[in-house]
Amino acid sequence: MKKINYFSIAFVFLIGFASQAQTKAWTLEECVKYAIKNNISIKNTELDTISANIDKRGAFGRFLPSANLSANHSWNIGLNQDITTGLLRNQTTQFSGVGANVGVDIYKGMQNQNTLRRANLSIVATKYNLQKMQEDIALNVANAFLQVLFNKENLKVQQEQLAINEKQYTRSQEMVKAGSIPRGDLLDVKATVATNKQNVIAAENNLLISKLSLAQLLQLKEFWDFDVVDDTNINDENNLMSVKPIDIYAKAKESRTELKIAKTNLEIAEKDISISKGAFQPSLRAFYGFDSRVSYADTFNPQTGQIESAKPPLEQLNNNKGQNFGLQLQIPVFNGFSVKNNVDRSKVAFEKSKIALEKADLDLQRNVYTAFTDAKGAMNAHESAIVALESREEAYNYAKEKYAVGLMNSFDFNQSQTLLTNAQSEVLRTKYDYIFKIKILEFYFGIPIDQIMKK
Image 1 (cartoon, rainbow, N blue to C red):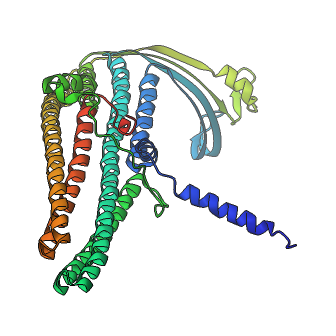
Image 2 (spheres, one colour):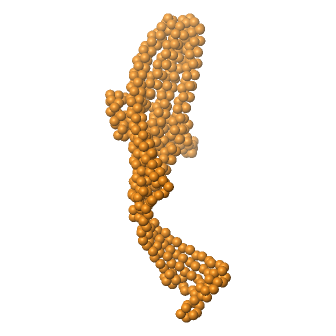
Image 3 (cartoon, one colour):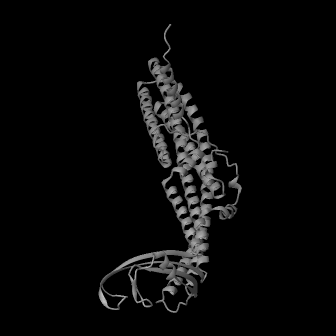
């Protein structure tokens, strides 16, 4: 009895498991989530959100008191006045000092409040920008995903056509031997088979390139075994083609991120005007300070008439301490037009933001109507392609019958096959064109693009 090689069995098992892992097909939802998670631009925008939160923390900090500690130590070397005799002489003295000060804004023309409100709006704007980028990436992924599906089905069509023509070539060989058709017809069929093989190779290359493009869009490092699911649904289950474009536009105005971004930017520009205007108003600040000092030089005591050594530092700190506190009022009078210029710049930025909002609204309206028209045209094109395919199939079957009994030459028969293949490809092209355009319309209607494969 042969000894069982457990290592070989384990190796085969691991290879089989790896093969299953490699052949995993990605859904559109998985592709979109992976792309959003790993996209470099999205990561950069997420950092913008972090920066906006830091700015908010800074704006909130303006309401808090400022507190600072200070300390210093100095040496005086050279000609100095001797504090014991009053005479000038060369000597070295040392001094130390400590201090603390606290200040808080009581009123600053509402600039602190408006700065905090602006910081909150900036956080909202960065979140909208992140959402817009995620939506754009989802749309690009969906387009690339559908391109892969189209190329996969197109490859099947070309492979099926090759299989049919190879069978036809075998049958033509038998017919030539039987004298039913001339040898020239066989050569035409052979040339057609060679052309079909070239079409299959081109279809394989197109599929590979489309998979590579999608994998690169996802930023996959290992893309050689990348594949997607084949299931698609072309039905307009939301029945958007029966909805008026103006109603889709009204729905889009409620949910589209680009409008939210423009509106938020307008609010930010309005806050900038309030902040810059606040510099015209007086500002009031409260302050408190504490300081003390230490001297390391000997001192003259006039009561005893003797020179005494310096007192201990802690005792000096206690004896020499001092405090100051009060209010500081600052009234702007003239600053070289700097405040006025800042206000004017803020007003110009506000007007630009208003124009940007109007433009975003007009662009959205135009995009919705264009998407509706494109989707309707794609639907009609697909329906026409189906009708054309049905006619080409009937014509091909009729041509095949005539060719089989010698009533049609190989050239005309091959033309019928080519027209059928073209009709099949056109059905596929219009199918995925319609799917993508109807999903764009659903996208404007507020339906997430990654729901395309869930219906």
